[in-house]
Image (spheres, rainbow, N blue to C red):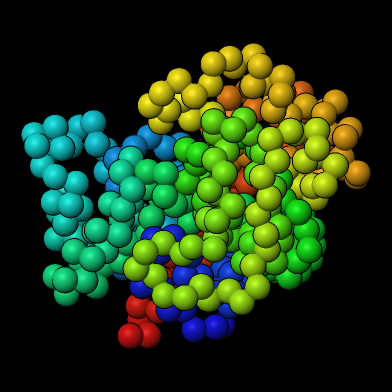
Length: 340
Ligand code: NCD
């Protein structure tokens, strides 16, 4: 196993090729373990993982908790609606309360960009050993989703040996609300790092031109990009022009709760122009898989019949892969902790 240098996982901008290889290898090993029976791995025995989701979640929170339990950790779930947030306690003080109760890992989701990074900095300043795993912050980043999507793609291209190399020279089409998507941002880092190109597709109001420069400009405060040759990013507003070039397509949810202005005047038109269905997939040069991080607006981003077509649609597979991917991240963080 390669050396793991990430005490906290905030985003994927500083992940190297070796990091992606380590996560995919370990995910594949954990995925191959028997799913039934009471077998647990002892790796995180005696550790406490707290899931602090200040924003709603179904799959991310549950799969982190299942992953932690499969590694024998104790798990503490925070429920914002019945918490002291309602009495004015701040987010950081709430998180520090869990640290005081002995949490070794905080899995944090927050509507504001940077909360996980601020928390990690506060823990470092206070000399605490607790690590932070970003489970989605604002529009910024959702690293574990980027990694499980990467694994799902690599596994589709080479089921026996899913590694970053499987993505080389592929073109991955991402269609939908790119502007509001932290998943799109994490996928851009992960996919281009493995040498695949990304085509971003959607209406101009949701696919801003400056996304093309996204991977060329690492976020402030980070060192030079650890990836020598990234894949390229292309923007194409017409789905019928993008589909024939794609080796896989990922649809993203229309995040209406994040749209401050009315960026989409007509949902029916969106569905007609950008919604995926069997008929539109006929434009592809070969059968290609369809992904979506969920939750899906059924019938808008993906037609109901396509969503249920397991021969094409990998949405269930993505949900399943979320558990071994999160096991891999928790395992790598715990292993590097014990080595220090
Ligand atoms: C995403 C999220 O919350 O960022 N969902 C997820 O974690 N699987 C995407 C979304 O909300 O549309």
